[in-house]
Length: 86
Image 1 (cartoon, rainbow, N blue to C red):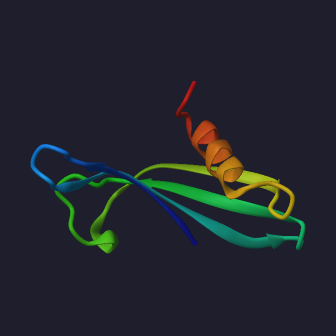
Image 2: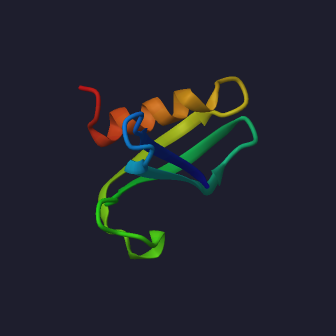
């Protein structure tokens, strides 16, 4: 599983606040060169344990060339598929 966290590191008070979290999981199908992934955007604010976080949005990326492309390409595809960045 890939976990993408967005954190705010305050230069004023020195605290770290998690603003967003997305998990990307391999579906298990696909080939060595290409993978199929499911993404979940999770609720963060007010939640302390990942197991209690509600799923806000889900997405799917098929046939991602996992060997020839950097992981940021997968993250960008998943965010776009879920509806962010449009």
